Image (cartoon, rainbow over all chains, first blue to last red; front, side, top):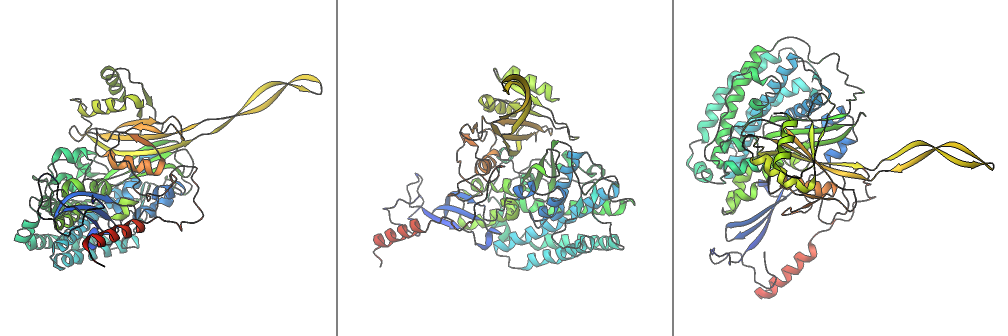
Length: 385
Length: 210
């Protein structure tokens, strides 16, 4: 902290070991381009070195949970799209799963397959875009991001022809999905999936052994295994630290137990591992996608007995969680027997991953904050809710 | 491992703790355990460290508001009606105090089991809103407890940094409470302009600039 009578210097003489140097307070954000939205970090600097970092958020807070308490169960479904607006379909699924647990609704097989196909496409485009943004933050201007967005466009086109919207899909329903796949959609998806291995090779070759990328990311922002678990970090960041915990394997929600896929794990828990784990996860997503596209059966997409309008679950509570692209996304619902949930809680994966930012950044330079934050993968819509 | 086993183990290992299983009638079947705040930290530490339980991961911390209810019941009372004592039925209304509740969802990343759900209640919704913080057991409770403090007004004793997180610092009320009423306008939003200008003035004086 700056003592009021001390002069403020832009650069301290040298970082001293006893912490007696001149500190500079910098407010990074909320309009900083590297913060991926309206997010602020109160950084205390000793020269270029970070001494303290406090994440400040809430700029996008609209009290999603309170809105949902005043909405019907179905009425909250479109709002979940706006949480993590990159991955609206997985948000839909997490919410639908929680309601299905609460009311004991079964999902037909075809709907389970559609859910897995759309979720893995979502994961694929999220990871591709994230790697694009991360490398863009590091100064790889444009190229990787545009490569990622080229594929993302096709995926969004697929979403649009299925759900009517590119990003705000509002597609899952309790006990299934809203509409069936349009004619020819599966063939389009198969054709597209066949082009993806080439894209993945290209995308990996583009940067994975790049000297600058390795220098900027290896050993930067190391997250230890024990701390990651204790701090509730989930998703690719946790697995980059070497913890084998993927809800697709642990909970086997939906029908994930029918698919053969691997869980990529990191060793060092640094930014490079987080980047690499995501690259490898894209390959596994493609693997699941191919199996699901091959095996999808015909049949109903929603249980005809499910009552969607005037839906009133019996009193009780349920916590449903899925492996969203950014980590564990959970919904905790309490019903009191009325058409509105008594309590509706979103367990946000982005927010929990963001809480370890200070520990990752302390001792690093300011320029590394941008890279570390980029590798955490946040969307402020979900952090602030 | 059933909840009953965990409960009896906890009773054996944490002396004096008061536990109660809260049933969940919904098909999810996620029953929970109500713990007494006085022993919360000991219970949490036991759940985290016991060899075969190892609930090392606190996934979700939720605040819930249960406002006081007006319960009306019919009672028979004796009253003087037209000079004669008669037995009449009247409705007696009682007001419950209400409380705030905090729910912890625990899983084990090591053993890959869960959830175990812990609940804690405050005494009331006005003065007795203190609960022990479990941040030192699970770091993941840190920001979530801050959020519950912000939106519900539960004060977590022992929390290292209990500040508002989603609402701004000058905000007064707790918006997730069921009886929260929105103000007519949000025109007033405090900014640190005066402090920043004062600091800039001092800075200029010291540096000898204009």
